[in-house]
Length: 612
Image (cartoon, rainbow, N blue to C red; front, side, top):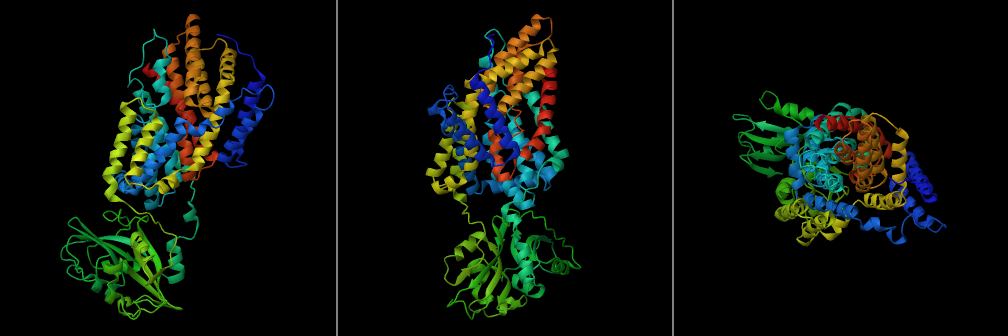
């Protein structure tokens, strides 16, 4: 093996690596801005005599056209397209139905599912497809998204070790083995990958409350809607779900009668698989039906007094329809010159006509909370209503109303496009699994198909891309190329292994594992694999010659497994993807990822030696 000497270019690259890590750890500037700064600095350094070979000028911005970055853009668009159809609503509802409604029960369900999926498709794809699901679950259960995304993302990375096609290093592994060495089969690594996935799940279930940050979303940091309506209107409301058994006093009575007597608002009914939202006032309550009721705890208690009804704030049959992403409480005003003035809520059939359940009427300094149905409306009246966001959006163009609430989801779900979305998702997965086409081309096929068939508009597709993620990854790729092209990585690996001298095989294997872990944090995992597999095989053969038990095949696999140990900083594609939506900082990855890195290494090394 040729001995490498430290060159000026290597010293500069090592300094750049140290500077990059310093910027990431201290976060004196945002990580994406830090990555861009390093990329620009790398380009300027090529003007210095003797440093022209750090990176070719025409490759400095090649990261923006790289397979990985284009794949990430495409998979974000595909995820947004599936979300637009409402598919992710149903997936989220199914996960909560199967996995429960607590953080400790949701994490194993989602992480296990994503881990298995990523064993057959690229982990970035599995993570991106589940991001909208995690957002829905976070919104419904009130769990900060930051406590859900990291377990899901780490499971996606680990899932790549379950099969030989789960990650690029494992796919490459057999091609890097000597021709006389037995190749690995598809499921040879499965016991190792499953043990690592189980470790990841157990780690976050047991220690998640200590290592995961609770980052509030921007909307959560402001005064919540419930706090606002409580403060302004004294409206203490909550959605309750109630089952109405046979012979219940409510059976046979109309919505209007019940609401007039109790002061509650019935916003949904469900009986015999028929769901009605904002039922009209003349609708009669049937036996064995479910009601969605908007009321204060005191009024709910009075409603259920002396009956077998057991109200709950945990929604089941109404979970999807009354998701906060679909409906909520809002303010609308009766516009000047409106045709509605002088008419009552009952006369206007406000629910049937506009989809509005009126809960309060504010007229000047006076607030009406009782007998709302019989109060003639006046121009300027402010109505506090419960409605779907779709209904509220329709009122934006109605001249009889002025919509006061502005901060609500305006997404237009397109359930009619579900077949198109699922077809292009299946097509994409098929291209990934059964063809040799580039990952980016396969994913762009699905993304383009969704855009052309109207699943998602091109403008929405642009908005769905996290450009922070794109610039973070694309700007770091030239630095990884410099580490590889200048021989810096090879020099580090060679000198580290030579310094060890004669050591037990397990020490040598652990050192190779540590080197692969380090390199995959600062350069591509493919580059780290290509570099270290031949080195690992040579050192194992040398150890065998010295009379030690060191299997070159196992040492090669050690490198391919170790390149998935990418949890410490957000340089892995999946970590970069979840960083923005989760509101994570580098220190969050170092806290949770530091322990995960050690656990991954210990479990992987133990399983490698047990299985092989």
